Structure formats: structure tokens, C-alpha cells
Length: 170
Image (cartoon, rainbow, N blue to C red; front, side, top):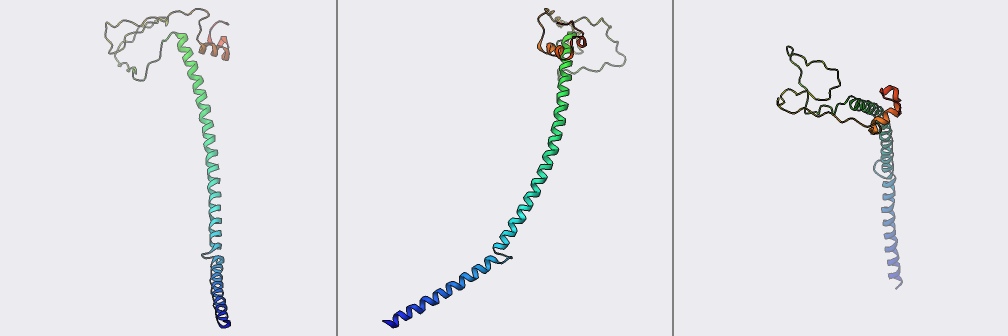
């Protein structure tokens, strides 16, 4: 029985020795800089550097985009103000609506007679080229009562003052 116990002890010692050699190889491979944990750490470090550079580029691009957006917003606000002034001028001059995109005015031929110059107070529209000669003229816009003022004009009067709009101080 002692002989069997000694044999089992030798087999267990040899198995432990082989297991230790396998573990030693794995630890050595893990610490190698070429293909182990060191390589993984080096690769991750390179990726972090790349991501930091990409983040810096994105910040620079977003800063440039922000400046462009601010410039465009300021230009759009100025254009909106000019459009509001033009609309107020259109309402004040009695023009009912501007020419739509599909109804562009045709240039007058060089030899064509010009329309008679009026005093600018007539609100009836002259027939357009290509319009039927028997088409009824557009009706004049109704006169507004003193308190019946559109909000856009009221806002412009508040912003610019009554003297710049040519109206009376209300």
C-alpha cells in the first residue's frame, strides 16, 4: 500500500510541475510587448491619443460652425427686419400683395410706349401683358379706420418712431 501511495504522490508532483510550466509560459506571453498584455496596453494608449486628436478637431470644427451660424443668424435677423419694413411700406403704399414667384413681370420691349405716369394714388392694377382685355380691374383696398392698424405697422411705429414712418403719433 505504501508503494501505491508513493506512486500517486509522484504522479501528482509531475502533474503540478507540468501545470506550473504551462502557467509560466502564459505569464511570459502575457507580459511580452509584442503580443501580450503590453501590446494591448500600447494599442489602447495609441487609440486614446487618436481619440484625443479627433476630439480636438471636432472642437475646432464646431467652433468654426458656431461662428458661421452666428453670422448667418445675424444676417437673417437683419434681412427679416428689412422684410418687415418692406411689408410695412407695401401696406402703407396700398399695394395689396407683391408679385408671386410664378407671376414674374416681363421686361418692356425697347419700342413699347410707357404707361402714363399717375400721381401714385390709384390703387387699381393695370392689366398685365397676356391678361384678357376684358378682365375686371382689381378693387381698391378699403380705407382703414384710425384704430384699425395692423400689428406689424404698430410694431414698426414703436421701434422706429412715428416720424420715420411718416404717420401721425398715435
